Length: 400
Ligand code: ADP
Image (cartoon, rainbow, N blue to C red):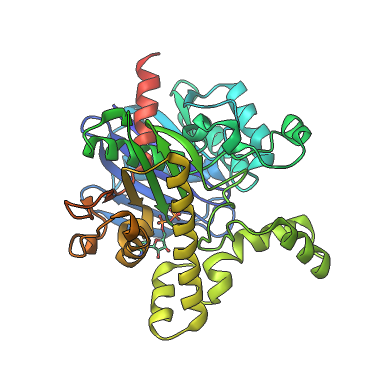
């Protein structure tokens, strides 16, 4: 069975075609700058790679490019579109209603649209992506949605409620949802295998997804009990361009002083803050490291803030869990930045965590990075959100 995995953003559409027989990625790519000038990238398992400038006025036009690339020319990986058995969509916000993946129906599309107020940057684009996929592949190809929030739905109210009047939870469902759920789910499941505890029963694990957007999750018995992101993916610790947690009154203070609208403030907190905002250099970790090595003090400060904030969350999650058996690092920074891992783990030296410096040099590969006598085990586990989406899609389609 071949499954097309889609991650639709407002001006982009990432795709991956996966052969579930062996979970092999056949092709992947990205339609960027949809509705602007358009750039289309297509890569195949066989090593073909192309990038072309091509106008894509909307997501439906983007799907036409994807269909063409998959079935024709040098980058062709299937003979006919009918080989695509199902489509799986990544959806950022599934609210409290969706604690697992579901088949797309009109009601589901409507719910995703309704949750757009909780994820304005994402959910509206996901609806566009689903509608365009239906237009491109026809209504008979089953489509499944996989929510970033679903895996965190096991959190207890004491972890997901905010200390504001209860009426706002009742009225608007304002609460912590958590994000990167598919990634936390994938790497935690792999960690449980490595610990020899499938399902995670009897284990306490902290998963650290460190990318442009970053979050931690605390898992007890295989279930999330807390996570750093909140109502939106802005909460938690400092990220590429996002602030992470700040005193809410600092936000109100700035809005008043600078005469900012909610939209402008949102833009500052989501796109101009974080590592970029502090360093003034870049949101990208590689640029940050370079600047820091060249003696840039604000880059150094941004670096130190990130480590310090991650360390604080890890410590609080260890307390919330009542201990920890394993810590997992994943995503762009977690998989490729030994120094961040080493700084975080060294802060746990007082608990008997012992880093294996040699193994911690690993980049982009699975590795246990603590020594045999370490009290807590730590792993680098490359994430694969697309495979989770494809697996869920297959599981649901197999039951039809
Ligand atoms: P996103 O949240 O956009 O999916 P990623 O998980 O790809 O982000 O992470 C992006 C971050 O990871 C960037 O800050 C980038 O610098 C860093 N990163 C990615 N690959 C590497 C690498 N090979 N070496 C060092 N840092 C990397």
